[in-house]
Image (cartoon, rainbow, N blue to C red; front, side, top):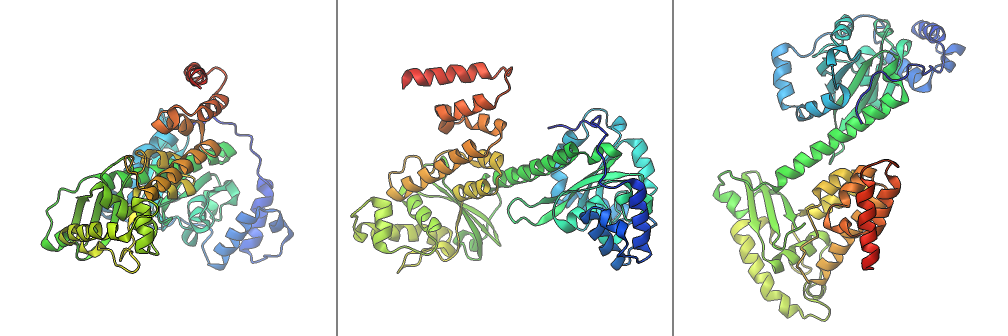
Length: 444
């Protein structure tokens, strides 16, 4: 989805501009019971009241909170810096100077870090203090899309006279907060400002889609960093795993799992044997612990004796003693002394949050594909089934088509038929899907 600011401008406000302006004046005078206020959108009316009670001034530009040198240093380290190219490509394509809109990206406190777009619009909005380094939180400027979106934690559209500050009445804006894809902590806000074209339903969909794309890209980059083999030198403390803060077990598409340990002294990567991988995976997904009998069954099969398991546990402990003593399993029951994340559980978590594209990117293949341990096979099937179910029931067309290209989806007739139904009638991709479906039908 790419911005097109030649969109229809016929969206109507819920109350006339004149009525909104009069209601605004009554509010500023302290007449909170005036009947005209009840005709203003509740979101706007409630924001006005917060601003009034917080004694926010209805005129004047916000002061700069970040000087030029400080702003530049802050921007370099901000989490959204890496997403700026994506934001520009989605919201400011083509001739930026003639787009008619400006795009602003701010931090979680409402301070604008990047303001880009149409030069004429930037010049005009600069007069009201809509510039890099200025604080546009609701506490400072009152009702405005960036600050109100941050306060409410959702996308917001503010049209013209709905702004609390009179200087902003000539403009309209749509904004949405950006969250950390794992912790859900707000990282910042993306805003588009211009005329009526930026407060259409299509504009809101575009901003929301851009936020989702940015959050997905942040997650992909994070997962990519986790899979890189650390090159840094490690101290003896890191080699023994003392001071361990976090561990991740990589099992997707791998027969020999990779255990990645992140300590306060650095990072360490250990490759585990197939049997040790199965044991660590079972302990990672059964955090409450397992009896020796149950763990033996999950690793070796029904009826397996704990005596078969014990020698392997001794060997596993020796491996961990040399590399990550903080993860040596406890016994009675067998359990890990600290939570151990897995890349497979990351995929399940992403699916639960609706981040289908990121989950599909993070899925690097079946869980320990060559393992015959019953517990691994069960978990492998559950991850594969969860991915398929999400693709069939919730995924967008482009994600579904991407799923149809990986081994799990290539020969799935139901997936291919659903993709065919979702494709436009004249799509050039239809012929290839029809051919694949016919081949599967012949082979059935």
